[in-house]
Length: 141
Image 1 (cartoon, rainbow, N blue to C red):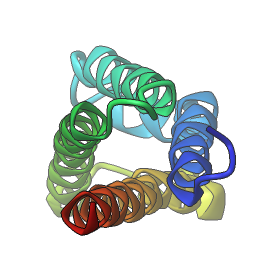
Image 2: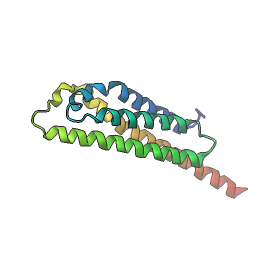
Image 3: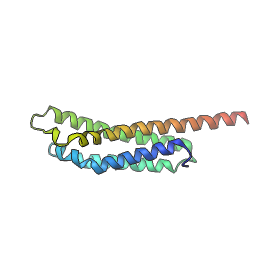
């Protein structure tokens, strides 16, 4: 299980999303005034994506299912990134929104789901390589 590189990528994605959920309050304090629903959506999508990534770690014996679960985690993370980008885009055009209150930490928090998506993509590529390797070994038998 831990010998496979995709397990490390899945754990990194889950950790990044966990840190994101821990520090997103800095950014939600600025964006929460404009969108009352944003906090619930961000916590829901972030928590669900992290949980799906952790579940995918334990599906190492079922490679095809693991690839599908990782793909679902990628879609959830993409939805999270799009929600955050749309909220940031809307707030950047408002003249009364003060985005400097979030600071550099707030910007780093916004990059964590993007980095988690990259880690999920690398994990799915690793699983696909394992699937291809097993198929080639079956052909040799």
